[in-house]
View 1 (tube, rainbow, N blue to C red):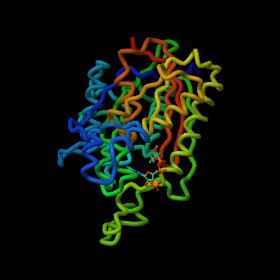
View 2: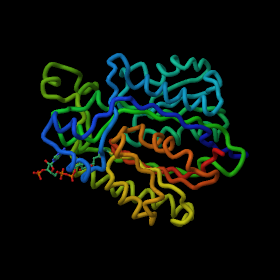
View 3: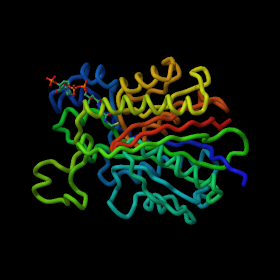
View 4: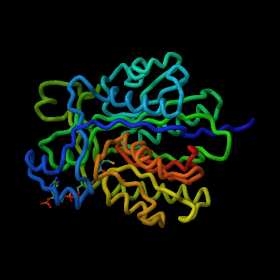
Length: 330
Ligand code: COA
């Protein structure tokens, strides 16, 4: 049987207008611009202020732009996979809300929860449907309203994240461009290093979970930093070696934007110079499922047809992985 290949045919994005700078955070908690910049690389992040808008809205806006750029109408979409850890509701899935907002009448839609690796897990899953011939046009969306689960009294976590969304259209490739390989890993975070403790079926919302601030994201920054640095660097090198790629063969590293130091360590391990690394963490912070498509969006005019890209991420779960693709937009 002939194996098909999936390729990205367009990228869209959505970023809220409001910019929360490090200076603004200084007025809210005991922190400072210098600490945030040198420890993380972040200068500002976007925050969705509209109270009646959330993750689905951002994902839908990103998807609309991607569809328009691909010249594909919503009713041609077969499948929507939406990666998020900040769904509008526990159920229905945020992907179902987006399906309705877009008017993607024949698409089936589901959410995928893999935190900061969510976009990569979703891209792998969507590409399989095309490779198997079960779908022709797939929308992959990474969208998170992280500000909805941030504790702005906790300076160790709230400074890191922002809101935003990115989306790509996947279609069948007719040549050598497209998604070539993927490696994914999971290791259950038994020590609760990166968790949102309450709100699920184990700890449903009670006055006590609210009073003890258990509905917010919590993390052991140092433990996550160590794991993330090792995980992202190892898997990025692994996918290069598996595919016989030298540093010269790789045009761009498209890394999850959690911390500039993690990105630099990954690039160093791959033998890549800094000019080959997409970095926009200074503008958006960590938008969780949004970081990788937002990089592709910002860099799309600088990408050449056939460029080898390595997409890499690490996130809560723990989840991590890499995708190797040849850029297929002319
Ligand atoms: N402003 C000022 N000081 C701060 C601060 C802030 N926002 N946050 C922490 N500090 C202080 C700490 O209290 C600590 O003080 P102490 O030495 O007096 O105890 C000091 O800075 C160093 O803290 P530490 O946690 O060791 O800093 P770090 O260099 O590890 O950086 C993170 C902290 C969170 C930036 C870093 O660990 C990180 O990026 N971790 C990974 C996070 C991540 O990627 N999460 C998402 C999943 S992909």
